[in-house]
Length: 262
Length: 271
Image (tube, rainbow over all chains, first blue to last red; front, side):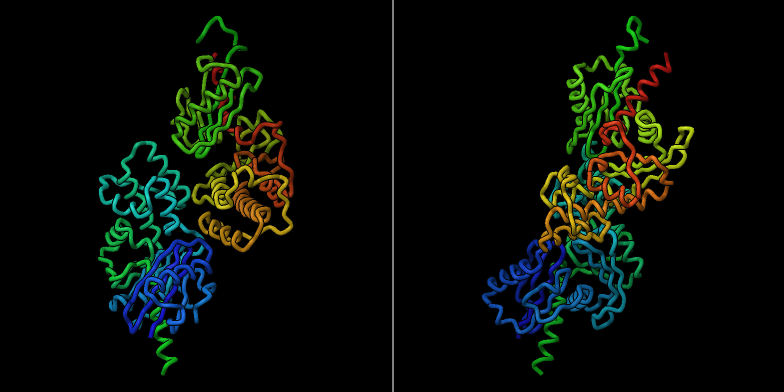
């Protein structure tokens, strides 16, 4: 039986295909609010890569910001449930998931089966999210995936005090003009992002094991800051942390497909 | 002190180096000789230098003729050739007093800043409110939305943009609103409706901040955002008043003009 998960986020669209509890493949593209087109495009790319067609998919669950817009989905499930489920499926010992997406921060507490018991989510302010990191990287003049590696060479990280990432953006630009070492600025950005994320996570409470999902989890600098602040190591996922929502959606799809064939 | 030169010949300058634009005012004893605004993305100090050169060229003067120069604004310490640096409030207050003595409330909304203060009947500042916690409602908010709409930021506030159906933008956060605007464009809203929605969001945020001081008439609205006619119109409606006449002075250069006036005061006072 072949199932699929499609996660249409605020900045990227992700698709995975699973067969009998094994991942066959995944795909990720950038999207901005064009949910229908992005979902169709990412799934088509993946199916072509796997030499499959839409008809081969027995069940598809969509999730993410644009989940209701996915035309080929049989069902949609909230991204909170999907991140919980996907993380638990990959790492069975996990209890707390910190998901940082393009536009929001979520802290999720899951039970032994991977279902959501409690969560916190940012709604009013996007400081600390993927888009914030993107804008800050732009101000520093580097690509978003370079901020993490760059920060590891820092000797004297900048401390950004402003809570708003847009105001911090200007502070970054001024540090650049002052000739401050870009590694120190990058480390400052990561420290800033980590502090925003920790506010949310601490509000929910931290129960081990803890894992981080979403695009920001690919930034080693942010992960290191969070590990240092919490005094624990975060779990390492065997898959790209940005795909975990889509994987969770596929796990839900597998459940549903199994029920339907019984 | 220089001798052999009448004070009439003396030239004073004010430079307001903001976060996204540099402003200069050059005055003599009784006249405004040049006002210049330069939006910048590069080095702040260089922008301050260039805007001064442009203003001097406009007035037909050269740098050595400047008797005294006061710098203000976010980047005041980066202004080359400044004789003194001063806070925004002093400069805004000084300029507003000079332009229109009836003003009792000043609202300043710049590229990334918000401030409001009251002026008592004796002319002194009586109440102030400043925020630097969030970029909602500032010029940067409008700028980011202009980027998304792919139109110049000046176009965002065209007085001719009349919308019968302003788009609702519910998020205050710049980043969340940015994605709302992207969705609005994809949903087929036209730019008139979106610009009206952006103006309504900005003015709504300004109103909630202005309430921290007393809104006593007359009210002067200054700073770069005051050049956005849609925000001005919406704000006047929400506050139920008409903004004070600034004698045709560009609201964005009020800070620079104030700095130049203070420069003149100091030189005259020290004579």
